[in-house]
Image (cartoon, rainbow, N blue to C red; front, side, top):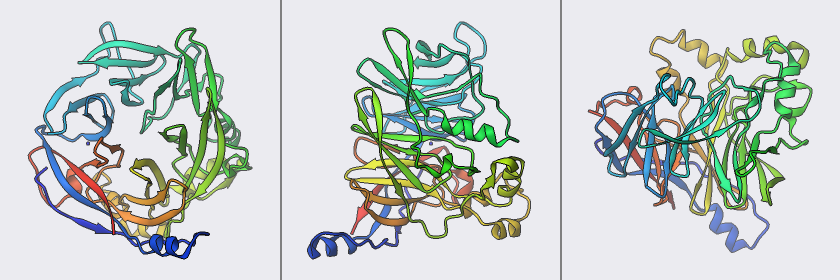
Length: 384
């Protein structure tokens, strides 16, 4: 986000039938996948922070508090390069930190209603201003900004004209029809919505399926999108300055706990129904060599949650019962494995470094061992 403790986690292989030669079929179905800790790095910081992002050019890791308002930059050996906390005063005030990550090597924060601020060595070095009135009511778990040609791409904030009412189905319907990603021309400042959900998505139907938290990953000209609360990946191809929808990939996940959908005219019942359980979440999509890893939590059923009673430990028991897993796909989106477990004490996996290692921060409260600082685990995808 730690003394090296070696774990080896084996996953059950999801068997697939391929329309190809018998040799290829046997080669594919005989593989098993696991995530093995190959190293651990200690960061000399007494306090909780989670690993959020990585800059491959400078090989720096970005760790932050839950509020995104304070962060560390560390190198591959865990040495602290920078410790900074945003200020609500001064010449570059950050009043809200609703998203944080690297963009072109700079620590970038989504600071509405201004836009995106760039920081280098704790000093503001630039910004991308949103040129229209907008609003935001959620924190982005993955900032996802990138640049191509003369355009910068980023999660589109909600326009101020959107009537926010969580008790009305029309709000959810309007929200899901908005562009998810917007581009801004670096020369003119003109903005354009460049990516929406496809019309085939069941999320655009006449029921409420959940509150969308878009998380996307670029792999060359291919963009992979998760909406957080469904086990599906929307695949787009970048064509010029736009994105063309290609297909939806459904992920087979045994014991996935789905959200309970409600009719649009019963929107007030949605959160009441779903707070009885912890629905599954598809939290990230990572590119690891020749594979895609869909990262998820399967969820906790209503029966399981009721047996736990009210939380008394800040939610740690719920997190331990609902750990992080990965489903493994090849680049043709054949699902090769499911329920590949991460170390039980891992925070949400979000980083793949230049060496192809998945790096995760350790949640101290989920571990049976105590450490004198933040621990980063380096994991390797093992294929047997």
